[in-house]
Length: 154
Image (cartoon, rainbow, N blue to C red; front, side, top):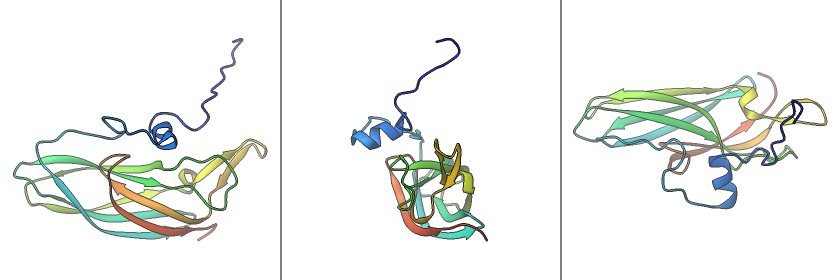
């Protein structure tokens, strides 16, 4: 009204609402259909400044060529007293693979993606502390999981 719109659901929109309410959707966020199958392996997490980098391998385990959208989700910061999602999409990579082919995938996650909006400060605040990182084919199908310490600076 009068140029203002109220979003009462806060940060819990879409897949974040399903996670918060522990509802299992028929087709989770990021779900795709393919005529082949994929396996994930070898998650390595490393800091990049105040952000992070997830490196892992995706292999086409089926008999047809196909594309997979590998997705990286980050859990909430234990040190940030703001409303946070149980998991938030932090990045993704689309990978085209022939049968049996494997490829190393790197997804960079910027510090801004690891931050939450603080209405009192009117700014973004980095969610420091030990954060869970999940990699998989959708918001509900993590194939790899790791933890990394997020902190300010290089």
